Image 1 (tube, rainbow, N blue to C red):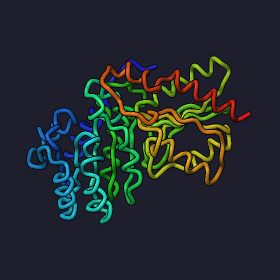
Image 2: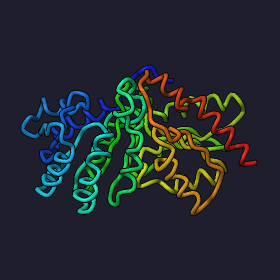
Image 3: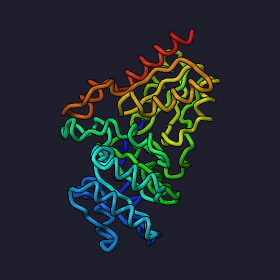
Image 4: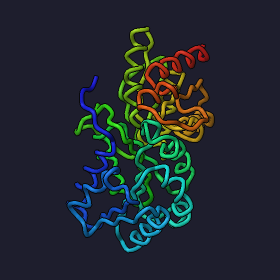
Length: 314
């Protein structure tokens, strides 16, 4: 379905460089991981607007807040597990409470980090960021969408959390495709069930769609690139028209995209829901393919979840 492979962190790096050329207020901070996060691409072109804060995530977020108060648009960048974990209080109290214009870029999201192991795999970051007032949570599905998400985050006022992946994943969206924060994108139409996914696992949802089609099951696929604010209209429309929902994310099943979708459905339109995600456990070292299979994040797992949801729909 797609021959091109790029990590979504590359889209972030390209987005930063483009922002640097058109918006002099954009500044970038990193916690000593600029090469891995691709923020070094911005640093190479705009060294006077790049700040390596060392391994001090809390200080980095506090400094970003101060820069925002001075009118800058700071992108505070490092691995998502360190930002959402170590710097959570600074993000909550300093950035979100004051609704400051700080962009939080969490890299190496999910288990596909691979050999880095559990300590570097962000599996709780969406939940930790989604619960914060004023925070937007954006999880782009491929490198092209990651660049658009970076540009879009700079264009809105207020805190944004952007989640990127380390490993190369299929590029299946096009430069000309639309992207708007808070607006889901229907990638495939379907009538029997809807798969709602975010991040690179959206590609697995597309593969699942093809397998289900061969089985005579019509599955809609929705790219929910913005987990907060959730596009509730798209969720409720899918529930009304297909009657069953499967969510898929590279994150704990608690508190992430699946939780957000379930919260919307239980209030307005309860239908059978199945969740594909990491099931209340930490990750471990391995290749991305090994880990995806071990933790049930493949197209095959999505197909099984759709079949299970359809059984409960009867």
